[in-house]
Image 1 (cartoon, rainbow, N blue to C red):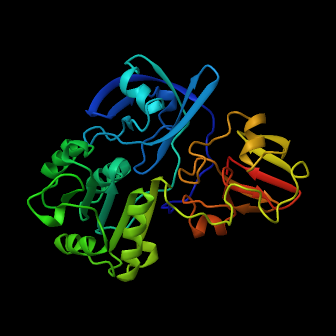
Image 2 (image 1 turned 135 degrees about the vertical axis):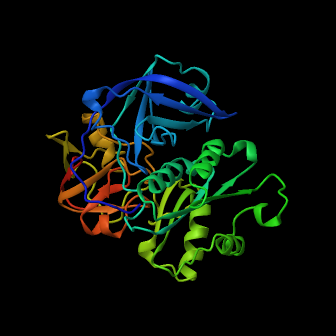
Image 3 (image 1 turned 180 degrees about the vertical axis):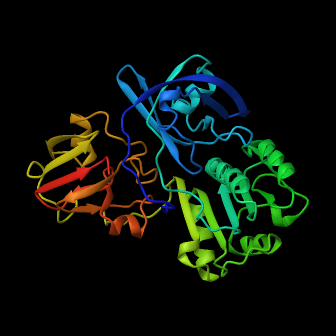
Length: 370
């Protein structure tokens, strides 16, 4: 992820919001719109590219999932989530089959730094895999609406036409901005008239798609935003770098890190240089209040002891993808495992992810409000 504007302190906590609309999109996905009371309008202001964490509690179990805020093009301020079923017993399955208008969901405020760079008149090239279309659709609509000189080109890789999320809304966006918006679909399990749009995206197919879109990777006025599974995002990122795309013009966000290599020899074991369990004291600042905890035997990362003492600590994926547990290292040091949410600027500023960080000093202070 890459910041596009200066950050302000995060507002933490959970807010019960009422479901006002539920709309089926595909066999496995629904769009859920929630009511935002006037006093929370600023807290839940829609910013293209940001996501919220939904907390779903059952007896003896709590699920947290991160979803991009994806308002329809005609209602850019709506708090709408596109929720896809991934397993038979997860929150996606609950949303698809049991969630109803009038129900209440607990949400944390929007967060994240994924977004388009503020370059007037730029050509924004968006490449999505599967449900990675959700933040990119919002970003496309926002750019076309706010910058009359920009152009947006979208490539959406999906299994079949029937599983391509938001295709109807993107068609409406094309009708509204016919000269400035292009959407191409590449289907891996459905034959298209052209071989260019049939199969998986690889470096060669990507080069041909960019040619069709008149996208020039070496042009600083051309930006690239990638969202999807790690494999697709890595293929595209590597290809763009080989073609000379400046690093600052390429942004990415993952919805899954499956297949990604770890950055430590044993990403789930104890860090080689970490203090022994029980000897590391962690102070966590959450919602303006500081709590001190101690790493216990069995704790892998700093999120573990903090979560026991402060259940409201922000987190979702626990795999270094969503960035919800981002915190500023105020004092002490950490060893950070595999992660895909922080970019070099974040790391240089002292941020870490609690779900992937292990103490490297006996005393550590993390500010989750920063």
